[in-house]
Image (cartoon, rainbow over all chains, first blue to last red):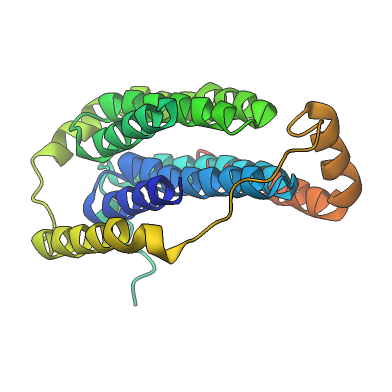
Length: 94
Length: 162
């Protein structure tokens, strides 16, 4: 289970680093959050302790908030530049 | 046995998410990932978390992604032709090495005892609710505030400026 979770996390990292499509970028972030969820549930089962299950709730809330704000950012960027590309998010570049 | 099949489906569909070209297909692969993950949660006797996974992820977050895809249908045509980043082979090598060492040494790195016996009410809604609202009351309130801020921020960012 630990190996599956870390493999899922690695896949998410590859997606974040390689993809230029912001939608796939956010899907990869969701993959990483899901990997952490899997680890939480697996260890909660291992030790018979439900605290891990409670933390899954918090990770879910963070994932939902991140999806909402991120997709709003994509929409805003698309409106101003008419292109969807991760490299276009460079306004804060020094 | 069932667990290893589920893990195989999980990893294959997760690979599909990042290697499929069309965003809609990536979203569908992500749906398969979520469902297999929910089945894994059921295997790990966390029933309510599995239900919540399907409800929140497949029911809300994925639908949000689908809406954004529908909104920008033709914008993705420009991106498919764009060149991949230059350090891609290096990155693939690094990830492959990482995964290789992980799978080779992983079983020795983490030596866990056999799972302990579960309490009778493990994973039920009642026990989870007690833990969430009694033991974790203040973190719960804090995360509610975080979510409120995120919703207001999403409205503010997505607003049409005229």
